[in-house]
Image: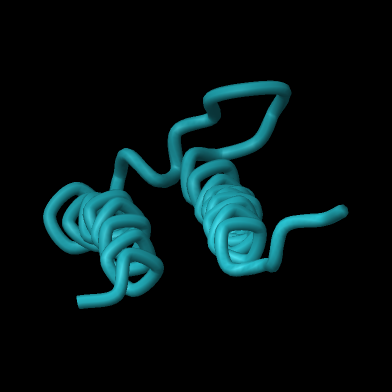
Length: 82
């Protein structure tokens, strides 16, 4: 399997674990979601925004790590400079 694909699956698994936690709390303890946690914002909004930020952050990590991998590969395949 391609290392970039493996990295993508790992980051996706991390996101799925956090999202699964969100779904479990909503299914089995919905009252927790109405608790005000920070600055008057309830847990549902805070966790939902956290999921969006996490997805964006994981996408940035994937992009940076895949670019670094492709840059290293292109340098090793280029002919030596004179």
